[in-house]
Image: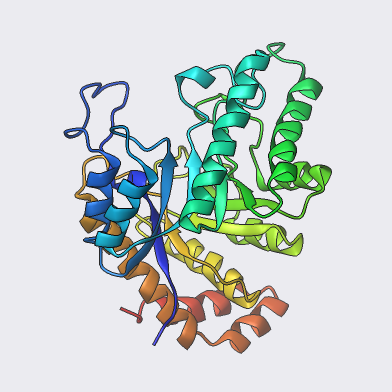
Amino acid sequence: MSNQRYGAGIWHFATYVDRYATDGYGEPRTILDAIDLAGQVRDLSVVDLNYPFFGGDFSNEQVGAALAKAELDVIGITPEIYTRAFAKGSFTNPDPGVRRLTHELVTAAAGVVRHFGADYVKLWPGQDGWDYPFQVDHGTLWKASLDGVGALASENPDLKFVIEYKPREPRVHMSFDSVSRTLLGIERIGLPNVGILLDFGHALFGGESPADSAQLAIDYGRLFGMDVNDNLRGWDDDMIAGTVHPIELFEFFYTLRRNNWEGVWQLDQFPFREDSVAAADLAIDFLKATERALDKLDVAGVVEAQSRHDSVTALRLVQQALFTSY
């Protein structure tokens, strides 16, 4: 029996707005409502929580009680360093007061990680970057990114800090925009507790091969976490995992297994119009089929085909394993 754990960002079970449906795609939910829904998903065992907790003034104890009822643990805490207060950036904001606010918020999130015994603080500095030519001094901006993350990691050596990179949105160009640039930054920071959370969809959106990105992060010892979803490559659509790029998702997990990478297989999906529990179940069903396919895949045959760069043979073996594993 598999010991693989499955997780999801708690935002998967929230409701959403966009610039068209400004009244939202459903009635607002609190984090307690979202945890209750997450508990209804088959095989879900951990969640990543936004901080501050959304929908009300909730204590760690209240959230903990909801998690216990739903039989869920916490894998990470994501401080919201991308909201209106950080419109001009969090770590890179030109206002030193906002940079201090970023530091304080992430420090508070680190305390929540300790409270729940979670694995990491997740940093998604979505407002750090620029929109126009000549808007910023690039050297100053990059240094501020690295100094901000480095200070937090140095002050909290008992915790892991994971950076989730993304090419763009909400900024037109984000500072941590790719696996290679993020790895360069982490190496410059030079601390062992800073790594990457690799979002499959962000890699697709950025024109990367997610499997290649995972291998690169693993080679540098910096793949601390991952999450999956899907998109049409033109935007970060956060669709249900496996619905658009099943072969590339399979190659991603194949790469993780070949490198003996062990961790939670986590969902980062935004089911705007879909039932959130059903969307999570569908994704996890695919992930479980993926695991079965990895078990039955003729790995030696794939390796031999790859040694000859024989795509037809390798893909025949992959398709036979994946498409017969439901």
